[in-house]
Image (cartoon, rainbow, N blue to C red; front, top):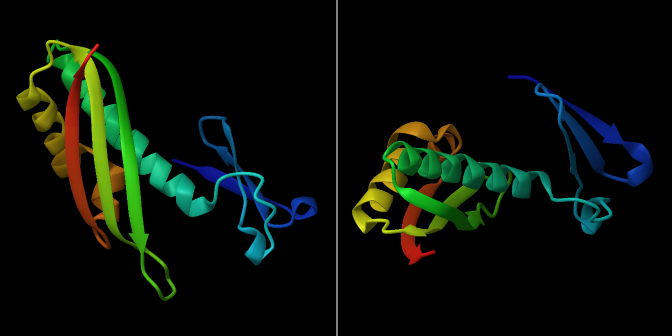
Length: 140
């Protein structure tokens, strides 16, 4: 996996990342750090990536189990250390999974498998952060 990040000096503290798969991602700093609030903060991007990584797993596991999954969202809340480096210290992930006839047990298993085995992002973040997961199943 590769990525190149370019500082965009004309935008203060904004950065453009070009991913190895050919996509662009823009990030910016907070105004108190010289940024202009033009894009998500780098740590917000990291948090978003962790949520997407885990949601991807949950949907894929449910689809492979032939469950009628129609939607999946994850609400994430992260606490950070007070001192530098301000790593994530606690991460709460609440999954809302919608579908027809989705058994709670199947969703619980998918979330657990993502958390324990498949999601590289959250497993890596678990080196510094306590990660809590919860879920709810909604009928679509």
